[in-house]
Image (cartoon, rainbow, N blue to C red; front, side, top):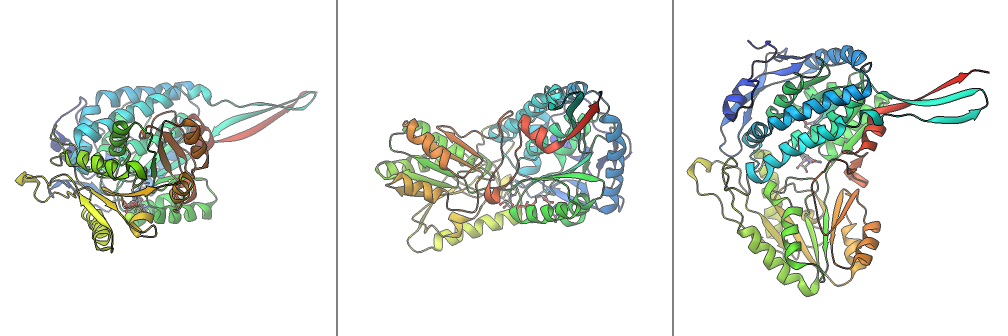
Length: 503
Ligand code: NAI
Ligand code: MG
């Protein structure tokens, strides 16, 4: 039963629990579902109920070995498929994922506690967008002609790197995986993904669906813990590229392991993204923008969350009151309920971590923390990992809440009088992922946009990752860009020079 190629339904299924059960206990290697070689598995828990919904194969070095060997064999053949045809295959995957978007949204809501209407559906559609976007880029894997000498034709060609390992987190696992897998495949690489232990199901279903179109071995999926499964994957000698999204701490470990083998690495490591609000902004749009920017609907579990908001003093109090009122009106509850705006925190560990920050903020002399939005009253949710969104003011700038990534529904607000001081404060953390500015003075906005230390700056909007926009941080937020044509060319190919002397 376990090693049948596709024991799950072909057609989309809206029964997320049945699908979770069908996906239990398996890796996907070489086009087939297989259990962990050790026979071990671990629980996948719905954070809204505390109930186990599935179990996941617990991968180790022996599973890594099998997956990388299959990916290596598949890569040789996949690289020979013409680039536009590889793209067309990836575009067919996009269509399949679009057809299954509602199914994937329900499954991701079940395993992560992310609200279906506000978060999970958006993620599922964006995943299809990303595959669709890269599917059209096969023909862009072009080289150059280099003027070298008469009677010498010198050209460059883009070649794939080989087997790519991708290690992904749990907050937007389908999307963050798509940003790696889609360009890697179109460029002629094959991929082994290590899913996040908290959210292995929806990405496994995506892998299985795509394997209905891709040649076996091109896209493989392992579940398991970081050091035991991610570690051997990064270190495997046949893995020629490492791409990682997660914490700074693990990013450093992964980067060191890649450096040991001298293979390239892409890192997306979170942030402490500032939002700067000027008194001349469009007030209502900016308050709504703060809700989006802070990713409150995702419980703030986003690397681009606007966790520091600097507001020009004349509108400071009005802005904070309006923001608190809007967050208050948001509904926390069952992630699968259409009426729910805000779901849960992912895991007990993250819950404790976020609670620790909130307690510390509340205990800080002079600081105030406003708790917004009511806890759910549904008895089925009483074990749910819900945390009320908090808005802190009057925190000192060296507070841990201001400097460190909380990855929870906590934002810190500050008044400012001087744009230069706001800019210095905005740049005053170790991170540099994203930032937003809200003003009708575009001369000022553009000037500050150029001087903000961030990979992505938006003025009067704060969208999440989109296909075709280069995305990635500076400072401790990471290395390299994702989501764009350049990211495929720079991070998933190398340039070979070929010279022909015909004189
Ligand atoms: P993490 O960095 O520990 O986990 C991310 C991925 O790395 C998971 O798949 C994990 O299994 C894997 N991993 C862990 N140790 C590894 C190792 N030694 N070798 C190879 N792979 C390894 O992140 P975690 O513990 O889930 O969250 C901790 C904090 O990290 C969060 O509170 C947040 O601040 C940040 N984070 C940032 C994310 C982002 O989008 N940039 C996403 C998730 C977490
Ligand atoms: Mg960790």
